[in-house]
Amino acid sequence: MICETYEIREEGSGDQARLTTYLISPSEEIEIKRRPLIIVCPGGGYTFVSDREAEMFALQWNAYGFHAAVLRYSIAPAVYPTALLELGRSIQMIKEHADTWGVDSDKILLEGSSAGGHLAASFGMFWNRPFLSEKLGVASEMLRPAGMILNYPVITSGPYAHDESFQNLLGGQYEAMKEEMSLENQVSEDTPPAFLWHTNEDGLVPAENSLLLALAMREYNIPVELHLYAKGGHGLGLADERTMGGGGYGIEPECQSWMELAHRWVKEVIMK
Image (cartoon, rainbow, N blue to C red; front, side, top):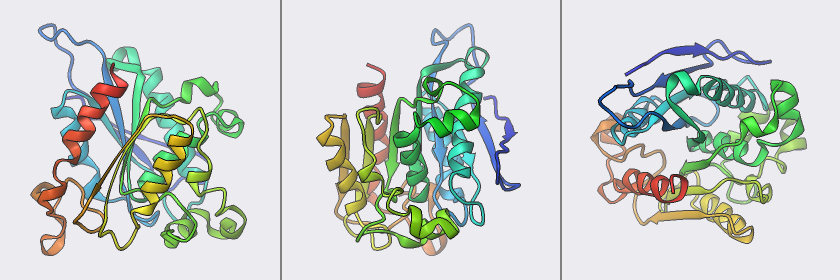
């Protein structure tokens, strides 16, 4: 495995902003020369970047035969669009190194959990906005993601909002921009396909966040797959012992199927 860390520095970036790659080493014995890559954006309410939704996710994607990278993006007091620019710069970096890293540059996906899901989905909505290409100095098409994997994501700033995430993301821009950051209202024909999962018992980020996005994507006939599990709280990670939190939190057998379902979705929708 090729595991390297790169500093990411955009206007407003914090010292912790970095991209860590988890690349499957090439081999003459293996026929596959280019692989999809999943950029993992952990959650944390835009106040921290969760370890429980970072490296272990990347390693699981490696086990499925995909490259992965973990983006530890800037958090409060950094405000929008700093993290979005960092994600865009990460995509640019990966595509520029696609030949040497063995990446299929047309199959770079964004995975985000909770507030990281908001970041990933934001990029899915805004990747072709002129301000992004202008600030990053690249053509919009270079920033196009192939798909989104959204784990119990923060999506809406409406009645079902996790308001703290939006306050941390927007800071002094909160009142002026919170409606624009309600992503179910930003879906367009250019939004990439998405796999979403949530739990009905999530008391922090209600399941309506995923439901609203799925409904909006259906209006545009964009491929979307949604799994709503009956049990389980927020921030389950892999829902097993590998990402168990304090006091044994996060073990939910019913939800442990989500990663295999996401893997199947990538193969059937993105790699077809």
